[in-house]
Length: 79
Image (tube, rainbow, N blue to C red; front, side, top):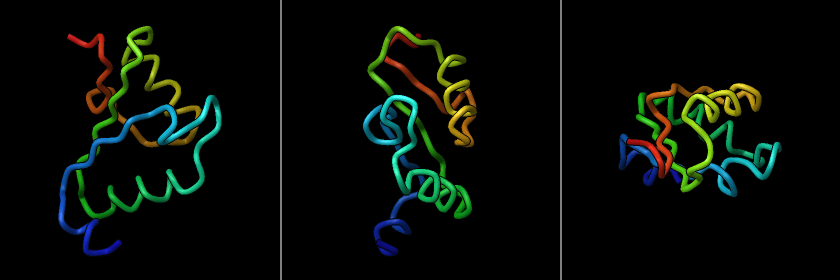
């Protein structure tokens, strides 16, 4: 995967079903995100869940031990 990972500097990740299921982090998600950050890549988290705010998602990231900034989180209701 090294060639693929070095081909891009910005990554978009869906949240539920890609990074976590419910309140459980998917195996390997934290390691991939940490690696991408260590390579100075930008990470953007996207979700089609319109019922939660960016701040609410930030709280979930914190609870799961995932480094994320509010300005990296975009939901379908964000304007």
